Structures are given as C-alpha cells and as structure tokens.
Amino acid sequence: MASYENVLIFTGTLDLETVKTAIGSYRESLQSLGAEIIHEDFWGLRPLAYPIDKHTTGYYIVTEYQAPTNTVARMEVLYKRDERILRFLTVSLDKFAVDYNARKRNGLIGRKQKASAEEASTEETIAAEAVVEQVTESSNPEPTTQEA
Amino acid sequence: MATAKDIRYLTTPKLSQLPKKYCRFKKAGIRYIDYKDPDFLLKFLNEQGKILPRRLTGNSLKFQRRVAQAIKRARHLAILPYVTDLLK
Image (tube, rainbow over all chains, first blue to last red; front, top):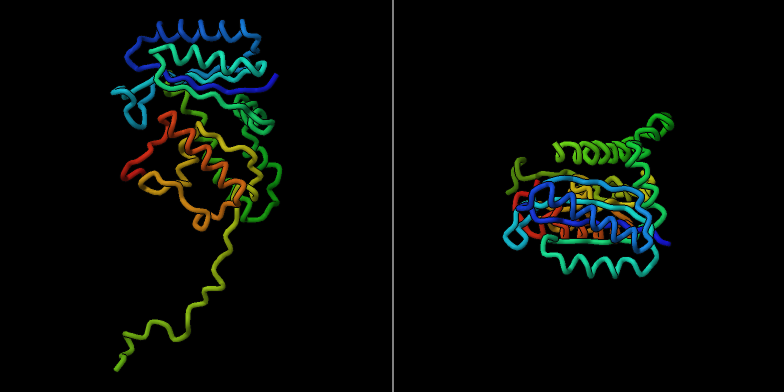
C-alpha cells in the first residue's frame, strides 16, 4: 500500500449533479480495487489558467488515498476513456507530503504554531515563516470560496 | 573633463558585501512543496510565467528541483499558465 493523490478536472459545462455522481462512481471503483480513501476535497467550479479543448472552466476534485501499486494504472485507463475529464494527475506521496496534507486538513500547516512556539527565533526565520504564513492563508480560504 | 556630476562613486561599490542568498526551504524547514498552491509557486515565476533561476531565488538544488516539479504539475492542471504576460 502506498499513498497517492489524484486531481481530476471535469469540464465546466457539466452540471453539479453529474459531476457529483461521476465522482461517486470513481470513488466506488477505487474502493473496489482495494483503495482506502483518506480525504476528498472538492474545489468546485474554477477558471482554468488557459483554455483546454476550448473549455475555460472546470470542476476540480482532489482525492488522497492509499492503494496497492497496480491501482493507479487501472484507474488512469478509466480516466482516459471518460470524455468528461479534461485532465487528470496522480502523484505518489512521500511521508512529508502525507504529513503536509494531514496538517493542511486540520488547518494547522504547522507554521503559525511554530511561530508561537519559537518566538525567540532570529529575524531571518521570522521572515521565512511570514512567507509560509502567506501560503496557509492563501490555501485555506480557496476551497470554501469556490464551493459557494 | 569629468564634472562632479559624472563621478558617481568615489570608491568602487563593494559587491562582495551583498546580503548572502539563502534557501528559504532549508531555513523555514519546509519539506514538501504543494503543487496545488499557486500563490506560493508565484514567488518562483517571473511575469511571463517562467521559472526563476536559482541564482535569483537562492534555492538549494534539491528544492529548486522540487519547485520546478511542483510548477510543472500546476501547469498541467491549469492552475498556473504555461505562457502569459503580466502574471503579477
């Protein structure tokens, strides 16, 4: 069993119901292949940074799961067959990525806590943490605003 | 003859005393770079969406590789553009 993260982009011309049922069916086929789903994050309808096949918007769904090694190849066949999917990407996660995702899910991302824990740190590290704090601020509100 | 206006430096500027560049990932203890976070990756792109070189960002080779990988993944997923103008 290894950890994977999968991002699917459905075409923006679909309605929300169709997308939700499609996501449900892919979740089931993942589970039937022996995968254990850890987290699902639906970003909702988002503008694409550049048009793909003349589509300018897409529904993003991010799934984190643990699965046997042959699962990804089998799932990608299904994704390729589906015309509603504009793009997909499956990435294997190392232990740092799994840790990062877990902290992001809990709204921690570690840095703000770290800042309070290490207040006596030097100016340089504070500057570096400020950089990271921007990350947490920017990454958290995004999914909620998209869903609304 | 050179007037006072033409003389910009009485002594040569000390290039050796520029602040030393550092790898922000090593310094802040970041172990994983998220490809789904465009605002963070924007720090490593120029206005045309090109990846900035290490000599400007100061990243270590290890993390420059990971930044590049994350940016390329984000581009594939249309989170970041491949080519653009006035990105920032």
